[in-house]
Image (cartoon, rainbow, N blue to C red):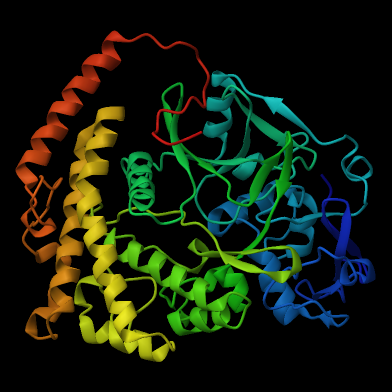
Length: 502
């Protein structure tokens, strides 16, 4: 592939299905000087929506200070982006050229290409490549050196973030396939992370726990390709309608607040720069249609991340769905993983709450301050903190037991639910107290208070952890016995073994 030339006036079409939403244009030979404008057709379309809260529907042209970071947020990050640049022979800061190569299947509803007809842009109609288990395993092994399989024949897709991920299509019957030539994907495959042991069951547990407590969450399942475990996440920005995959638009909170991906934390240690605060996020969400409900859902998602020890809940791990007519809905929860089981992982939150960096340091008055700062009812916020903490406390051991019954390997679930229950008990206790010298303690220094499934007639505070641990250990032994004795019915790589996956 030849290196991309920067040509002033070069333009790409931004498409929603076969509708021209607008134009992405190089304004000069400066690599970051790109602009976006809506098309006349889109401005008058009855189902039109803005591509971002930072770019309302308007005839004006949006400049690089808004456009460059927004489109950068659609791309991989860090080392993955460097590798993509090397493969494509594109400077990693050349967002325009990157998007041209990877714009066939993006986060959200947009596709970016030169021509209205995908065949004219890619030379082929959209299609799929079905994968055998061996082929899927080969694709996964290739990801560290070929993020999202960039440069492969027919592949034009991107996935934000620094970790290995692969957009795929889950076919009828469970087989996975690669989307080609602009075909939309339906799921995101996340292989086990070599840096963090048990990353797949860890994230699966946290996501299933969110579902159990009644929060909206992206459905997940656990799959295997040869010796590789992976998490399969159903995309909430895709809907299958009569056999057709329909895209739904979204943007993450980095995009909605106008920040680039390298400022996704409130304090970005490596570059010593501030990113958006909780108040910035609340403000951006509150100014959009549906702001009141969406701010509560954001608060509840943020609280759940605190209770599960997901200290990496940065702004790219929260998103907004942008519907026809510009209606906004807070997106389902995704990317939740407990960090306490990993030595050396910081316990500081990605965003401070009332100037507190640790979830275990939050008392009632901090939640009151958070509510006051964001125009919310302190009483309602404290009540929701108590209600969600109690629900997580009750469901954490139950979900751990259920997953041990299904998958075996109960050890990681035991580890995580102990930490989760510590956080919940601490949160409930702190709601009734004021900060004092104990405010300097870390969660890791607290005694283990893990509760378990409540028995009939007993309150959540009287939960029996020993009984739960015995049940989990017994379930693990039974699951191992069943797994050794059972023969698989087929070799479908995406066969779901996780409760609740359709």
